[in-house]
Figure 1: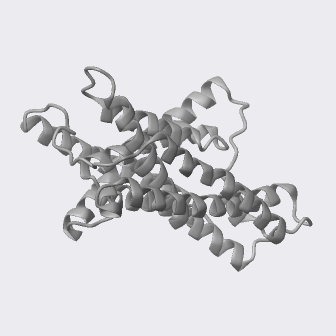
Figure 2: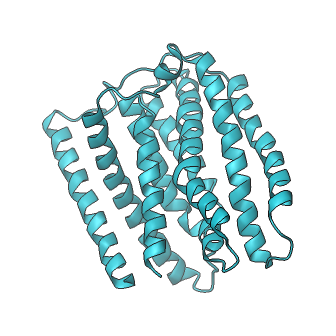
Length: 286
């Protein structure tokens, strides 16, 4: 099965490369130029104060997560399993609070509220095509960068420990009951993608667009915002440093999709599919 999954990864990367090539040909045929030149605007009143209100959600969610883990994680478990479960339950608490804060801020800051923020579907057919294409592109680029990163690590730091993600540690623990498994899967497949996209793309990236556009002569402020938000998104996953580079690339793909579409639905579903694919591949290994 592991051999089959490796070849399935290769097939997905090749499919994404074909899709990207077709996009580049179409873009060149249309005359090239900035791909975001006709991207929709998102009129808003975002400010540093509103951004900090969302960041405060991290602190509140972290405190709530501490209470939750103290209540539901048994101290009799092995230390690594305790840490994994604490990470999962803590992340769920953080993202629920941050998600709530983002919804409140967007309702106030964006013209036309949540619709102006991007929580809308204009066309199911069009949205589905963008989600599929974005997922293929993100999976392909992130996959290639992941292989390159692992090659560099093996070549220059062969003794470097490459920690497993807390989600997989929690799922693989023999002590894991049905409740913790369900919470872990829902966290990775739904809660984390929702929270991360609403914050990193919907709030942070939008704020950065305004910050960079204030610079005299700024022409590519959206690209700067995509790059910075994507980089911070990747760095947030510092517990698995070997995956920081591919996740930075994925974050930039998600940021481009948000700017190009003006819809948060697209990056949210692409992110969900990316995580579900990882969960499925993990489950099929056993």
